[in-house]
Length: 81
Image (cartoon, rainbow, N blue to C red; front, side, top):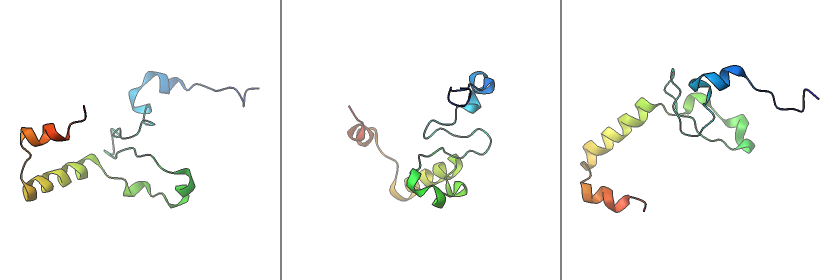
């Protein structure tokens, strides 16, 4: 019976950094973004290829340098109602 009933880990209930199962949250120590993976491709998944928050911010900065910053009206046009 103990193998079929869900067990709770006390640290998961007490500490926020154990809530890393949510997609797109950021790991507090590594800065890596949690990404969903397909279970069919689990063997090919490389956890070190996952982007870090610093890498994503750098890519956004480079994009803005090359293409200019968006105006407020351009941002509003992309917003989802």
